[in-house]
Image 1: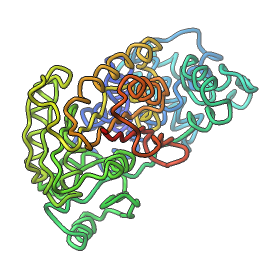
Image 2: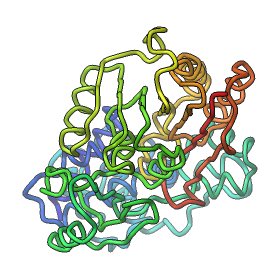
Image 3: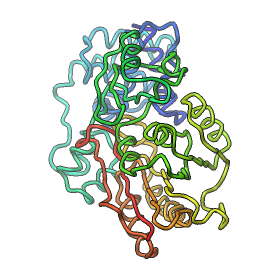
Image 4: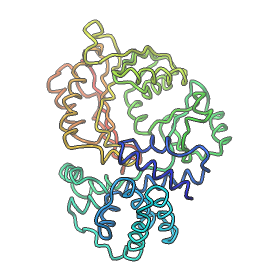
Length: 419
């Protein structure tokens, strides 16, 4: 599986060196001619390495003094196979040496010696123990500041379970009832040989792990959309009706508006904005593919102006956020986020909420969502808004979906009614 490991190295380099997202790095660096088995192995190797990166680095530190860049990643991939995956020691070491010979030829002997030492001594590694933030950081491979924050916010046991949540290897999709029906959709999945299980969300399914689903006719013809169960639950909770006028303020790539259209049989009147030109174009293409009618515009929702005040039955804000609710499925997020991000984001989120509240009709709804589980970005923002906007009240208690409890992405949503 040398080709698979070469692809895994390229993807891991892209994430750790260039800041790429895991899913995009895999799509870019897994060659089209790789066999399905090799693609699955390469994807598993990259994701497992990232999910256990700090633990792997801790283990390697007992056997090497330093290694950087691609050499460090060759060692990490080898260590992942030795410590976590069910790979024979000889195969893990020899394949890693082969990678070194191709990409870091002067380091092949070093890689061989380091990984052989790790293979022989891995059972004697003394990992930190006890209910401390540092021990949790190594055990769950999460930066120390996140562990400290979540222990403070939720208590140790909850933080440990939250940070230990693992994403399903299956892909969550929704059938698009604007283009197909349940019988035909399930037949199409069967034609591709994909396992399927209804998820409990309206038209939601878990299908067998599938890389590059965008290359299938299922996707191209708009029969499905890739969307998390948590995001779907949040849209369902808003209770959008076919007669409603909906404003989606931070809409791109358009998934939530498209689901609103699906839930209402295409009846809802959709206006969808985004602040980035390329994302507006992406949204237009998604709507066209899914058969969704919507008015799209390049617009900063905070500055649209009074002429649109009191015009919409539902205003939806899927706010820019830390995305830390997605860490189980996108392990790169935990290494990219900084403490300063969590301090700065609530200011933007509060301004968005304040700016968009005026677009809601009397008696209408204002829905606020994030893919974060951080209280500063969620309850803190809602509490501050309700304290200053006495003409809004929560329609029902706000909801936080935690990955280790709901089995999907971490998510928050609050639906408020304008008096």
